[in-house]
Amino acid sequence: MNPRSAYPRDLIFVVSLCVCAGLMAYPAQAQQAAGGLGVRSVAMPPQRLPIWGPSRQDGTGQPAVDSVSTSSAQTAGSLGASGSLGGGSARGVVAAPVSGKVGSLHAPYSEEYGLPLEPVVTEGPGNDLVVVVPPLQPGTPLAPPYRSRLWLDFEYLMWWLEGSRTPPLVTSGIGGSVGILGETGTDVLFPTSLLNSDMRSGFRAGATYWFDNERQIGIDGDYLIMLEESEHFSISSDGNPVLARPYFDVVAGHEDSHVFAFPDAAIGTIAISSDSCFQAAGICLRKAILETNDVVLPGDDGAGSRVDWVVGYRFVQLDEGLTINESFEAAGPTRFDLHDSFDAENTFHGVNLGMLAEMRCWGFSLELAMLLALGHSSADVVIDGTTTTTAGGAPAVSDGGLLALATNSGSYTQNNLAAIPELGVTLGYNITQRLRATLGYSFIYWSRVARPGEQIDRNLNPSYFPDNGPPAGAPLPEFVFMTSDMWIQGIDFGVDFRF
Image (cartoon, rainbow, N blue to C red; front, side, top):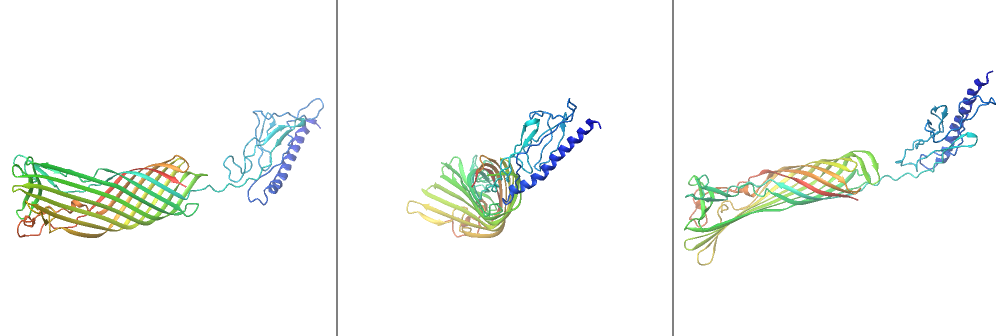
C-alpha cells in the first residue's frame, strides 16, 4: 500500500476524535457550571487541541506536524461554545477561535453574563496548537434599568392672546369737526387695534408620577399663568384739538358725539385702561397604550416611542376689564367726572381627553400633545357707571356715565357648553440622563368667551343721560350677551427633570 494514501485518513481520524471529545465534554461541564443559578452561563475548561497539518513525506516516512503561529494573518474558522471545531484553512493550516462571542454571549451589553470570553491560542509542546478557553464565571443578571417615576417640567412662556374687539372710544376733530364718526376731519384716537394683543410672559409647571416602575400608569398635573397684560391711553386738551366720545343717537337716528374738549367751551382729559389675565390648571390619569424601545440602557430611554392617553379635569379662566375715566370743566365753572367700567370673567370646568406621543432618538426627543376639553363655561359681566358733578359745593353723584347707564348697568351671568382644544409640539435634548432642555409651540382655542369691549352698546338714548331730564323713548343702551371665540398661542422654553 502506498504510505502517502494512509496519511489523509490518519489526519481525518485524529480531527474527528478531537471534535467528538469536545462535543461530549462541553455540554456536561457547561450544565454543571450553570445548574441552580437561574441564569444561562457556559463554562469550558482549558483544552489542548492538537491540530495536524497536511501530511508530507520526510526522511522517516512519518507524517510531520506543522508549526502554527497564533499571529498568522492566514488563520480562519472558529470554535463555538459547543466545543465544535469548524472553518477552513489557509495553506493547509486550521486556525483556532479568536472571536469575542461564545454561545449566546454578546459583548458588551449582555445583561445575563459577565465579561466576554477571550479564547487564548498558544503553541504547545511538539508543535501542537493549544486552545485555552477560560472558565466562564457565572454572571449576576443585571437589574432592569431604573426608570424614573417622577417627572417635573418648568417652562417660560412667550404667548399671544387674541385681542379684544372694542368700538371707537375717543376721537378728535379738526376743521370744524366735533369727532363724529364718518365726519370729515374726525380721527379715531383709541383704540386703533385690538386691545391686549401684544406678547405676554407666563409660566407653566407640571408634574407626572408613575405608579409602577414600567411607567405604564400614572397621574399628571399642570398649572400655567400668563402675567397680566395692560394697555393704557390718556390725552388732555385745552380745547384744541377737539376731543370727543362717539356714539349712535337712536332718537335722532344718526352718529353723534359727546364733546369734552372744545375751544373756549371745555377743557378736558380722558384715561382708559384695559387689563387681561389668563390661567389654567388640570389633573388627569395617564395610561401608556403603546411603547417601543429599540435600546434600553440604565438611566436612559435610548431610542423608541410611546403613546399615552389621558383623561381628567380641566380648569381655564380669563379675567378682563375695561375702565374709562373722563373729566372736563365747562363754563360756570362746573366740573364733570364720568366713569364707565366693563368687566368680564370667563371660567371653564370640564373633562379633558387626549393623547400624548413621544419619540426618542438617543439624546433627542419629539413630543406631540392633542387634547380636547369639553364642559361648562360661565361668563360673568359687570357693568357700572357714575357721574360726579361739582359746582362750587359738595359733589353730587348720579348713576350712569356715558356708555354705562342705568339701562345696561348691573351683573349678568351666562352659562354655555364650550370646547377647548389644545395642541402642542415640543423638541427636547438630553443635557444629562435626568435633565432635558425643551423648546415647544402651544395652541389653545376657546369657544364662547365674553370680552369686555364686545359688551359695549353704542346705541344711546340721550334722554337717559344723568341729569338730562325725564327719560323718554327706548331704554338704550341695553345689555345683550356677546360671545366670541378666542385663540392663544406661543413659544415655550423649559427644562424637564426626571427623578
